[in-house]
Image 1 (cartoon, rainbow, N blue to C red):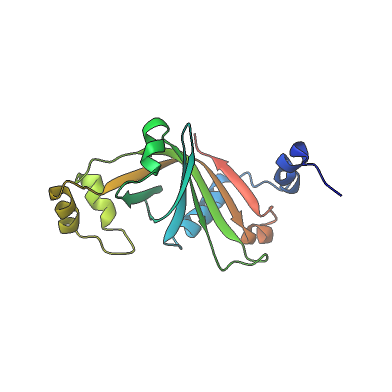
Image 2: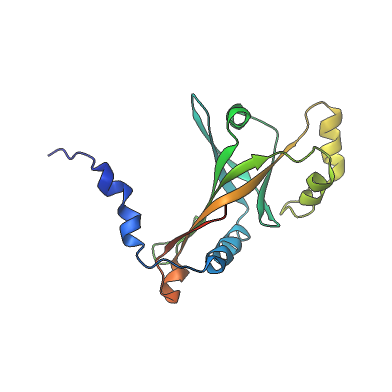
Length: 175
């Protein structure tokens, strides 16, 4: 027997399940910050007119922003036309009783290559990045770019919300 997709039912699935919404954005942001500070890699998704790109990368969570150093690639085809992105971070080892993930939706800015912010962020990387390395790449004509994701919406899936009386999925709108 073939089943047809009921898009209305599928779209509303989590809205129905999430009846216990947390109205304190600080609780949600605290969970998001804890998760973002716990893992070294994410997937950054970009979209353009002709394709979607999702790239696994290392990131730096610093001062409430997600930063990504990158050489380039297909994501820049999309970023040239559309600066909106989604960053997805999740605990690969999580089971259904202990889920932890964050989706950060926002817009990308490009801090100046070798500028103050660019070099400051590198000091907070999990894996040491020396200024000399960046300079060497610049001198070779192939600089490392820095993406700064400015969050405007954050979705958090955290099993710990249950112990606070809330649904596992929570969302906060920042802008």
